[in-house]
Image (cartoon, rainbow, N blue to C red; front, side, top):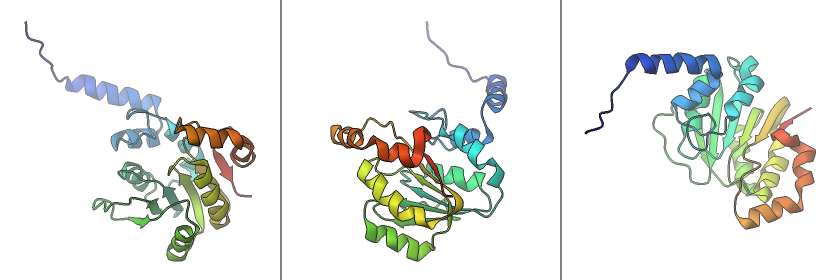
Length: 196
């Protein structure tokens, strides 16, 4: 007996409608572009549910967003669609050329290098409404980039560190265990800092 896989267009439409009732519009965009910030691509962090609550009121504003650590560029596509009037900048140590990102600026740099961070600010002038750190996941890099870039957030701007519970190398876990108060002092348990 041969197993035949069929395509059920009605079921797919039902699933899409069901998802639209469950997930925020930002999560649906994230899932469309297959970023792990959504719910369907491994490991499916579901950050977009929190992000939607934080960002929905500024969705159509001309904000400035910096994302550190862009990987394959999937989340940049998500931000570009969600924030149609935003100036979006992606920074990565291994920045590639994403031809499909015409409204997004890319900067190659190391978040743990103050010279690279200073060059980023000279080139793009700061005044960020949102900075998302999805870069190296190393505690020392978190500290360096946050301590430098927090001065370039607008009043009320948000600095978010993703994957604080990331199970990285033994060295990373050891360093995080040595200084958990730094994270709690600045970010609380959610990884979100709001500039006064």
